[in-house]
Each structure stands twice: as C-alpha cells, then as structure tokens.
Length: 388
Image 1 (tube, rainbow, N blue to C red):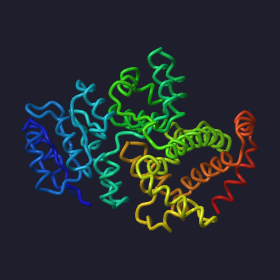
Image 2 (image 1 turned 90 degrees about the horizontal axis):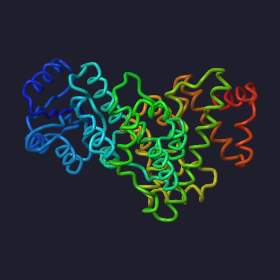
Image 3 (image 1 turned 180 degrees about the vertical axis):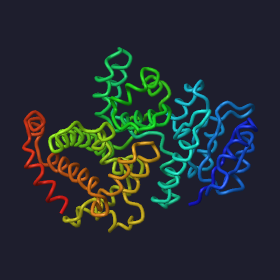
C-alpha cells in the first residue's frame, strides 16, 4: 500500500497551501477542486486516503465522502473543515462517513501524524479486502437494554460519571464514544477513558450519538450471534473492571486514563467476526472444539486464516476508530507478547490474568474479588510466570 493522498476543497488557495506543506515529503498528493473532480481522480488513480472539506458548492463534502465510502471502501476518509461546522462533522463520524477530523486552519505536524498513523496501520494489516470490509463498518451491534438505559440517562441529564458507567457495559457504545472524541474533538493526547471522553464531548456529542448514530441492535442478528455478542460484552465489562483493579494494586498508582478501556477492547476482533463474519467464526469454533488444546487463535490459523486473524482485524479496527496507540499495540501483540517491549508485556500479562480470573470465577466470587484487597505479591508472581 502506498501513500497516495487526495485533498478535495473548493478553495484553490487551500489546495495550494496543502501542496506546499507536502513538498519534498514521501507522499503522492492529488488535488480536487470539487466533489465531482475528486471522484474523477479516484476513478483514475489508486488513492489510499481522501481528505475533504465539508462545505462545497454543488456536491457538498459529506455527499462526496459518502460516495467514496460506497464506491471505494478501501479508501480511508478524513474531514478537513472549520470548527464552526462541528455539527456536520459529528454527524459524519457518528454515521461512518468519515473516520477522522482535522480543523482549519490545520497544524502540519498534526496532519502528518494522522496520515502517517493511518498508513502504518494499513501496512501492518496488509490486506486490502479486509481494509475494505472494516472501512464499511459504521458500528458494532448494541445491546438493546443497555442502549435504552444509556438513552434514558442522557435525556434525563444524569451525571457524566453515571452515563459512562452505563456505556462501559456495551462494546458498541463505548467504542463509538472513544471514536467520536478522538476524531471530532481535537486533543494532542488520544482519550482512552469513556468517562473522560464524555466529559470532553459534553451533551452535544452524546446527543449526536443518539440522534445521528447508525447504532444497530443485536436483535437483527441470529440467536447464536446474539448469545455470543452478549457473552463477549459480559466478559469485556468484567475483564476491564478487574484489569483496572489489578493494575492499580500491582503498580501502586492510579491507572492512566488511556489504559482504562483496554479490557473493553480485548475481544473486539471476535465481536467483529461474530457480527459480520459469522460463518467464519462458526468454522473456527468448530475447529477449536475438534482440537481441544487449540486456542481460538490457533484454530483460526489451522482454518487457513493465518494472514488475517481476529488479532489483525481487532487491531486495525481500533486504529481506524482512533483509539490510543496503546490499544492497537496490545491487541496486535496479544498472542505473541514475546515480540513486545517489557512494559507492553506487563500490560498484556495483567489483561491475561484478568481474563483468567473472570473465566474461572463465579459471579459471586468475581464481585468479591473486586471488593476485597488483592495481595500484590500474588499478582506479581502470576505476572512473572506469564511473562516468562
């Protein structure tokens, strides 16, 4: 995959300025003065990323990006617009028309960083069919009961802390919140905490999720799919709560905000398989059952998905949805932690230990371990064994 970037804007001065910004850099820059011209360039060239203004005459930017999504799903889509158009930007990101947002006037370092990150993730995955499929996903299936609870809390002006606690029960809602805050609300540090994200977004962002979101209910899925989605939501919620407690006990300090949802994203690749690639997921599970010592990942490789396992799927999805880099690193290295640096190995070990406890403990025992003090030395011994 290359570095072919298309910029679309109706102001010639903006396009010239963008072209100057990339002078002598390792990018191939294409410029379009309208949505129509942008589509012509896409038809004739192998474009990787499109960056488009919102307000343009004749074909507006959101219509243009929607057409790009439909016609060229492997192309990543970014909005470049003024903050005064934030309502339009929010709607574009919530509905999956765009993945990211850069404000006008832009900071070159921010622009280059975003583009470099997208290109790096595309190269890591190195599967154009997968990129096209994942680029088409607007949202993950939502648990109806949690969504209604989330909606009720927003409409009744509950505290942001309470809304966050509800959102964390559902992978789809929490991931949409993290995506939105890291895409549409400029911050030099990517946000990984649902509560922190909600505090930054405020009521405007929350209502955008309610009014403009394409959040889909799991009721549209088969019974087996619904069961698995519910199971993974329950697992991720518990793993995340326990991970935070184990981390803070082991480290003796408050967990960094960008780590606070690492547990929520642990099963993200499997959730995507369940929701959008059920036949493949079912095949892997059957293979795993026929080889009792196989993990899901090993059964996946045995099923000839070695070039694109749920690990790569989850990692790319998190990068596409603008999660902090640590989320991508953890998921990408989760099954092969020996390739990671020591700090990352430690985080993966803590997540693995949290997952082990959650799977082995009853609900009552799980609640008790959250209430009780945990022996730091016991955690240390378990972490040491897992990192060997």
